[in-house]
Length: 262
Image 1 (cartoon, rainbow, N blue to C red):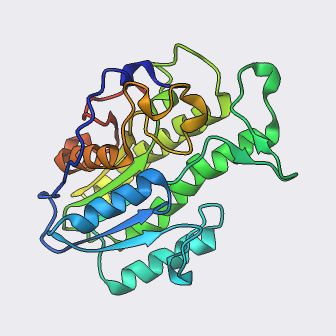
Image 2: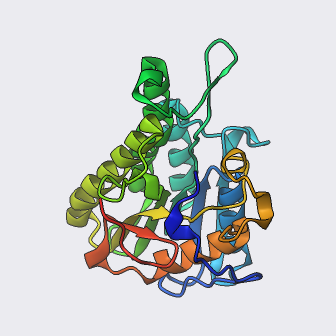
């Protein structure tokens, strides 16, 4: 399912980003850094001369200390503690998530096309990975941010998680989980505004990106109009995040910085 609003996108190859709103030598962490978008986000940050270091965190990370499983809170808490031990973070990007999720029997939970296809296990799996896991990451990693310095937290959401923009239906579990993620980010932003007034949170829609997640739903493949490469999507998302103001914290934005209806 390609978002119709993404079809007019104009990818810009080779885009580079420098996060000028953060202090020189800023430190970043990317959860989901082995995925297409997460890996591109991490690479873009590493290429920024103003960046002092990037923690690439993932469930399948090669180094044990870089492994984070969003379905396992102790692993999230341990990774956040390791990050704090090095020094304060300035940026966290949660780039994890999934659409087709593994079944306990070895099969796959496919996106639902009708109410008759709803399964309790599939709905629970969507919530666990796409909403609860990122919320737990916020819970533990927020402690790694300086209360006085500007900080940025971005999480991959999706336009299909918009209730107001839902015209096609279907994909019940994934839509509901992303809508829940948006609410959790919004609520966290309200709370953190009191303790970390310079910390900005945002739910971000990356557009339709050439990746394993979107591949089964793109009949035209990479040649289909309106498809972003992961590098281009990463550059756009980081640029949007860098330009947000404190008043916009807790918002839901697309890759061009336009607000998306809740």
